[in-house]
Image (cartoon, rainbow, N blue to C red):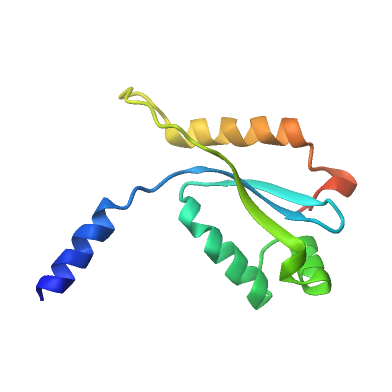
Length: 114
């Protein structure tokens, strides 16, 4: 029982970081830029692609065609929370994502549309 409490305490101490990431096909250069309130969920993105159930059908098709080894999943930027009591993490994450969309322009032949 003590081990369970210890593991639970460790879990509570894990810092959850929000941020912007991209999934890029190294063979074609096409990419998906997105954000998440929990960057630890990126393993889940890889899992859904491997299972064939990712929501983005174009990305899913290329994952199936080229294979997992043709893709990189990388964190572009971690959201830096502020101590300000009025800090809106959701809004800040949306702005951070828009910054990276503007910078990388993953549209048309460079990106995966929904």
